[in-house]
Amino acid sequence: MNHFPSTSWGKPRNDALDPYASFPIHQGRPQTNDVFADGVQRTQQPIVTGTSVLGIKFKGGVMMAADNLASYGSLARFKDIVRLHPVGEQTLLGASGDMADFQQVKRLLENLITSEALQDDGHALNPSQIYEYLSNVMYQKRSKFDPFWNAFLVGGLDHDGEPFLSYVDLLGTTYSSPSLATGYGNHLAQPLLRRALERLGPDGYKNLEEDEAKKIIQSAMRVLFYRDARALNKFQIATVTKRGVEVSEPMEAPTEWGFAEGLRGYGNSDETY
Image (tube, helix red, strand yellow):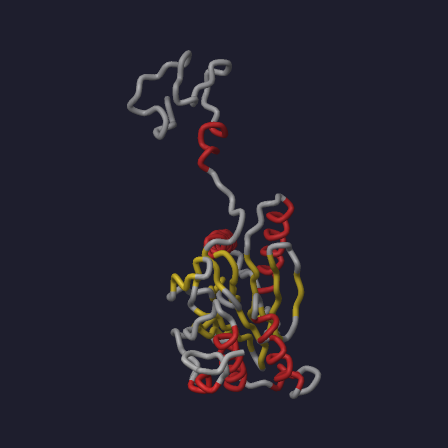
């Protein structure tokens, strides 16, 4: 039976002369790699991308924030993209970089969670285990010179209730910290997050309340909107606590641009640099 509808169904079969190259003369059977691989393409560079993701530990949980913009190059193209994704019941994934690759990673993680649930052994994957899996996936893809063009934050609560927050990128680079950021936020927002935690002592996150963590995150997102040309003042904040994973509705940080009129070289000002 012919199992290749895209090449031969509805057409006369001729093993000796096959213009569709689905039945090689020397073998007389389909070569699926030759037939279908021509249409397979690999991402050579990010196309539609998201910018920074911020993460911070607090007393009893982890909080992340990411805006809803996916840029097509320098064009602010999609303004309703969700880049914070729950994985299971106690894990949260935040993604920057290529959105198509992010979609594929979500499929992989959903399959992983489904496979674990089908075992029906009472065990659920915790954030550190999901992070180890994702780290191996990213390193394996990098080793094949076909990376997922992303940087991820993985956060949640481990089985002992301890907050977990770690980073992994397209090279398979991994590390953990009480506060993390990807993209441009690693340069602008991370110092703000670190300073806020350092004020609270060596293990500052253990003394940081959820409401205060939210204020810190909102302030950092406002700075990114001011300074990052690929950022949008429409973002979501997600938390992982004993209540589970909660992703907020899109919100905006209060901003003020009136001061720009007093800057030299801005707008219709007569002053020049």
